[in-house]
Image (cartoon, rainbow, N blue to C red; front, side):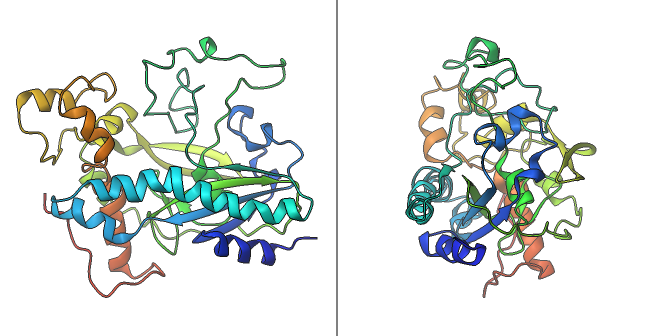
Length: 327
């Protein structure tokens, strides 16, 4: 029989920086299409692994001199390399003990989300490629039975992390942990091994300073409207996000964009369109893939991280101050 202590020790050995455990009933109030139990009804535990994003990867964006590092090493490699490798190593413990696991990295297309109202659960799939997926999700898939959601279901990693006691959702909608603030990404493992769950994090990291709102290059975070979700027997809220503006800012545009690759008027037009439809821009396409966090993380990640460090509330301490972005 596996214990929570054994599982957590193995998660860290497998490559995770954070690990938390949630009981399935904490997800019971979510609609079926957002509930991980829809995929594995027999699961008795939901394990959430966090893999940090190195603080130094933000430096090139902060200085305005090197963007590919954060995108490729911090974002893409986390999704498509570090998470799958860590999950592969981690899940072997369960199978060797006779338990089933369903590992889920944050790397799937979630292709059934085109028709979702972004306010329904406070999360739209902002990177969906309209050339691949239709605007109406009913054109993409259908339920196999009347009482089941159509594939693929989507559950938010941040809500899973909340249920596993790893931290809280800040005003920007970005998940914050007491170890790293916003500097991590999450993967999930559903298993039929029954493990002791962790308590819900009590909160207190986000002090509603407004820096994420002020420094968002897309002006995408509302200063007044809230999204509220009921989960784990309680209500949690964050500021409403304009997903269209966030999507543009993520790829280098926005009202307050600081993008050194935006040289000509043609560049400006391309970066400020919805990203995939603008990919015909000769410069825009490669930059999306090699440096997609051109400044969109300036508010919700970097400004937030610097503020949390200045307050001294994070466990991961550094010898040098991070400071403000150069533009």
